[in-house]
Image 1 (cartoon, one colour):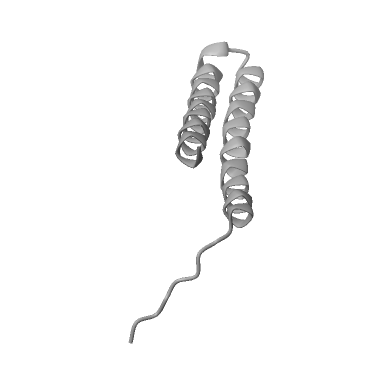
Image 2 (cartoon, rainbow, N blue to C red):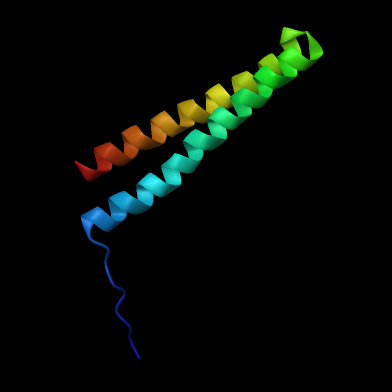
Length: 74
């Protein structure tokens, strides 16, 4: 018994991708915000700087994913 999978339209694929990538943005900014909070709380920049760096890396990964997905669609 073979079942055919339904294909999503381009608009549906775009909407799903927006939802997923939006979570990457939130995650990156939350991690960076936590780093800022740690820096202010501890009155030392270095402990919070690691969190801010990690948030920046997440945002960079977000950028790479968007560019690769855009190139695939074109």
